[in-house]
Length: 95
Length: 95
Image: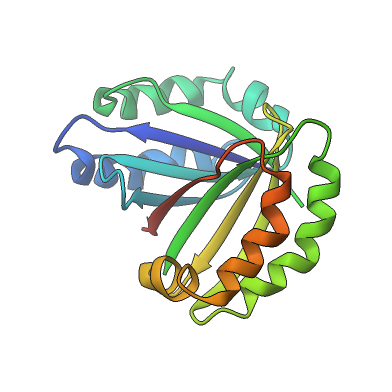
């Protein structure tokens, strides 16, 4: 299992609206092959940042299977209007 | 519940040794009031970074209860010899 940790900085004042959009937009991710689960977090020190913790069966399930699929285009179309800057994404191996 | 996400950059070549030390050192954290659970991750893009995801009952359980206790002194004594730089720590609210 691989954890994707993504930090999404939202345009000022739009983070609550973004969280509402996420509720349905995440269904696009949930349907991807190799998706395991997702948790959504909001920053305490950085309240305009949403952290997504997404578990994937493999690294490639995210970086190839999802990112090269039509789902990724739909996902980014739904969420990118809220971006204040490009998301920061890294992958982690659970020990 | 509050998530603490801590990034610890380890001195070059010492990350495996650090993970071994963590196994017992985390017992110091586990014994703290308000501790819920911890997951340890290793970076894929940054293999010298260990990410700790620690769930606490409240923010203050970490920032006051733990950090102002003797446990914090013991914890930092155990892990700080491995630091390449000061850890980066933020707190997140699970949605």
